[in-house]
Length: 124
Image (cartoon, rainbow, N blue to C red):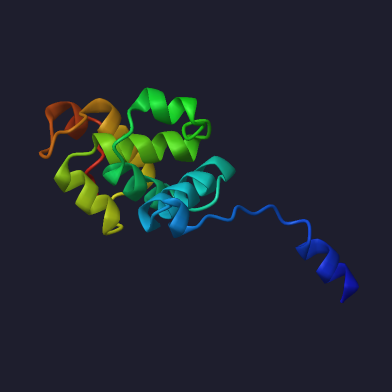
């Protein structure tokens, strides 16, 4: 049991307080970005975060959020997928690899473009 107490005393933590102006939204952002930097979570988690984030790609890169493939794919899907592709991805009907490829080839397109269709990404 003493090893557990020793382990717990070495866990890095940040203490923030609302009274100091730290909001719930700020706490959620810090948590999400920390998870992305640490490689915790899924591409789906990252895409959902980036979809609602107002940061630019340059800012995300500078903050270390795109240093891993999951972060880059999450960015591509969150920021680049059209509404239809994004919905299919969230519903589990389009894999992260395919959603990222669609976002790379046809960023922002809600419909299937000829380029995307020719890749066979919508096959059975």
